[in-house]
Length: 225
Image 1 (cartoon, rainbow, N blue to C red):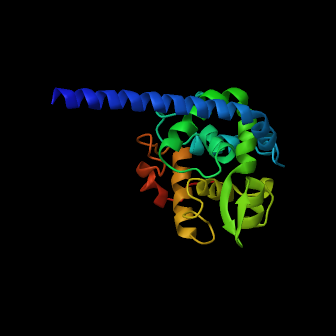
Image 2: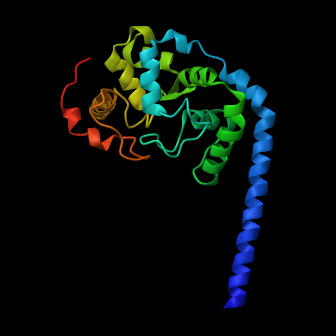
């Protein structure tokens, strides 16, 4: 029994060493491609300043409420979920085929120790606005808020109503499930919960409460715009 325990302990230590070495290599590899990532991420027609400040605030409150306080990852703010804006950018620019599991650890480490250090918060916001995925249309991905505004509402971002804007923000959690054309009821329900949360009528209850369960009843009320 004691020998088995020692062997198990040794195997665990060996596994930890291998994991540390692998993740150290992953960080080194990420550092090497940072210049290309920054160049690609900076491309896009939309600047954060093109949107009213309150709309940027809406986006941050929904997608990453601790954005200005954390350094790439946030595993404590209620409603933040498991993916910050920085982590989303890591998934977009550092992975060809992101798969759950160890990739999540790698994503978090790159966000914390590589991308957040290399890219300012305004630059991250610009990249997020221009490179986020908003579902598919006619077999092609809809990338960026400007393309989403034109695709789903035939408008430029500045021409969107608050509810139309929030309906696009609502998609970011799960573009297929909250597509405002294919799943209008699901999208509208999420928008109502977001409106209730933004109005201060309810708040997320825990880290993973990205659906704002406490807002479900209030969402039935039509809030003023």
